[in-house]
Each structure stands twice: as C-alpha cells, then as structure tokens.
Amino acid sequence: MQNICILGATGSIGQSTIDVVLRHPDLYQVYALTAHSQIDKLLEQAKLCQPKYLVLSNGASYQHAKQALLASGIKTELLSGAQALADVASAHEVDVVMAAIVGGAGLLPTIAAVKAGKKVLLANKESLVMSGELFINAAKEHGATILPIDSEHNAIFQCLPHDYQYGDLASCGISSILLTGSGGPFRETPLNRLSEMTPAQACAHPNWDMGQKISVDSATMMNKGLEFIEARWLFGLQTSDIKVVLHPQSIIHSMVQYCDGSVLAQMGNPDMRTPIAHGLAFPKRIDSGVKPLDFQTVSNFSFDEPEPQRYPNLYLAIEASDAGQYATTALNAANEVAVAAFLSGQIGFSQIAQVNQQCVAQMQGCQLDDINAIVEWDKECRSQAQQIISSYSR
Ligand code: NDP
Ligand code: MG
Image 1 (cartoon, rainbow, N blue to C red):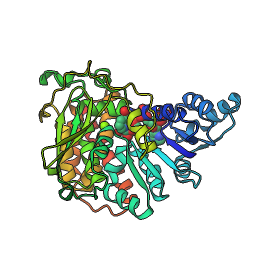
Image 2 (image 1 turned 30 degrees about the vertical axis):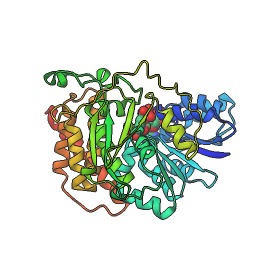
Image 3 (image 1 turned 60 degrees about the horizontal axis):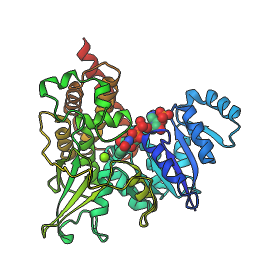
C-alpha cells in the first residue's frame, strides 16, 4: 500500500489523480490533499479519500475552512500555509507526491518532496523551468525518483530505452526527440485577428480539458516552450536534440527518433489519467479508466511546423533555454504575470508575448546558486513584468 500526497488536489490534474487512485483502493491510500482556495471541493474530495491531512495554502481562508470541516463531520486534520505544504510533501509516511500545483507556487513544496527523496510525479513543469539544474541535482543527491506526468515527457520516457543514461543520446542510437503539440485553439486563426482573442476563446482547448493558466499557455504555445525547457532538464538534452512538431489531433503525445530510421511514438486518447496511471504504477501498468484508442475514428493524423509569427512565446522559450537559468526563471515569472493580466482583461492576447520578451530583455543575467536566489529572482522578475504591464495603460 502506497501513501500519496496530492499537491493541488482540486485542480484538473489533482482531480484526475484522485480518479485513478480511487480505482485502486488495494494499492494506494491518500495521506494528504492540498488546495489554495476551493474549500468546498477540497472537503468533497476529503469525504471520498479520507486523507490524514488537508492543507489550505491560502491561510486567509483557514477559519472559514475550519468551520466548514467541523460542520461536515469529516475526520481529518486541517493545516494551512506554505510550510504545511512542504511538511506534507516531505512527511516520512509519504511514498509518492503528485506535484500538481499550478505555477511558481509549486516550487517550494515540490523541492521539499525531492529533498525528502520521494517518488515525485511531476506535473508542475514551472518548478523545473524555474530551478532546472538545482532541481535535478537535488533529486540525484537525495535519491528522489522523478517521473514525468506532462503527457509529452511521459511519452518520451516511455519511448526511451530502459538503459537510457541521462544526456547520452548517441550511445542508444537516438537521433532526435520529437516534442508534439496541438497548436492550441488559434492554430488557424488569421494572424491579424490574434490580438482580439478573448480569455474564453483562449481557454477553449480543442482536445484537452485543463486549468486556465496552462490553457492560455497552450494557445500561445508558451506551454510547448516550457515543455522544451522541461525536456532538456528531465532527459539532459541540447537544443539541437529536440524538434517541435505540430500534431493537431493530440493522439501522438511525443516521439523518439532512432538512427536506424525507427520512430517510436506513444499514443492514446488525450486524457491525463493515462500518464498519471503510468507514473503511479511504474514500472507496472494499472487501469486508468481511459477509453482505448479507436483507430477507426482517428485515421487522420497530420503534422506541421509551428509558425514563429503565430507562436513567438515558443521561440522566446527556446532562446531562454540557451541563455541560461536566469532567463528561463525570468520568462516563467513574466509569463505567469502576463497570463494573469490577460485573464483579468488588463492586456490583450498578443501582449502576453510582448511582456515576456521585454521582461527577459530587461532582466539581465545573474548567477542563481540556490533555491532562495531563485525565489528572489522570481519576485524581481514578477515585479518588472507588472511594471511593463502598467506602462501599457499609461
Ligand atoms: P489548475 O488550475 O486546474 O489547478 C491548480 C491547483 O493548484 C489547484 O489545486 C489550486 O487550488 C492550486 N493552487 C493554485 N494557486 C496556488 C497557490 N498559490 N499555492 C498553492 N496551490 C495553489 O491547474 P492544472 O491542474 O491544469 O495544472 C497543474 C499543473 O500541472 C501545472 O503546472 C500545469 O502546467 C501542469 N499540467 C497540467 C496538465 C493538464 O492537463 N491540466 C497537463 C500537463 C501539465 P484551488 O483549486 O483551491 O485554487
Ligand atoms: Mg504537456
């Protein structure tokens, strides 16, 4: 029986994780569930999962949540605040941590799980983008196992040879990693209309049902940019090792190309329960509840290249990944601020890339030697991005 801590339980990945876990009561039990502000949803989940702890990261709602918990009669302990997140993620009773908080808020609890040597199911790509080498070195030093949950990285992981050595493509005969992406809801929108696109349109992803932030990132393809950086760190890749391929049907989740001409692809219906179940059970397989792929209905596979004018964020991310840690942390920070400003109607869709580009250009190189330096740099970059946004309305 494995004890699981689900960080970001009330989100899209968190809910899919609970769905898979509850299918296997003989294998998994829930130790802790965390949320930021959705108290009712958290209590509903607590009824189903009976965790030892609930954590509400937003301390301001603690009293309200405490009363709601008392009224519900659910027997569990309620904690709150940032330290409580790190505590449940690193508790000695915990075997597996699902890192599914959205954005930079996931960094510290995910790092806490890594430093406690846990099996970490990594959905929160932003934490790896923000801290890259420090994250990977901490995993090595503390014996943590990082299993990729992002569907593309999970697909790559499944298509790599079992004896793959970090960063050594040549000795396994790998010629490239093909990172696929759907191109999002605006793949065919005339370029001159992109600036008019609304948050509701940006969040209406054609194939995946996800949280708001990653949905907007998919529309700008910043998501693929973050995934490019994520892939470099997870598998030890160079920029030239990765090719981004548009595949609008989202059936192939990524591929590995070998020097003998073979291409291995991982396929499946676009449902995150597949990579979640893979990560949970690895190296075994368990039922995920996902419908099997029906090749009678998915016969039209197509592939294309992402246009730079349509997806400037993708290319900004690739440049940042070559510039170094200061640039990827800055880009991630700027993007979180810009996406929030877009969702609240402060800036237009095309201005997201503008904010990102300006912020990275203005925040020039610095050395980031530990997690505290990353957290400080992230704050400075967020504040710079806010200033850039304010300057637009002046
Ligand atoms: P959601 O927005 O659906 O959920 C986010 C979760 O994080 C919620 O539980 C939310 O709590 C919690 N949260 C929000 N803000 C904070 C904060 N400041 N501190 C602590 N917790 C917070 O996101 P997704 O599930 O879509 O995505 C989660 C992560 O997984 C992201 O990093 C994303 O990139 C990655 N991912 C997601 C995929 C998907 O299909 N959704 C696919 C691949 C990767 P509350 O609900 O209370 O607000
Ligand atoms: Mg993905």
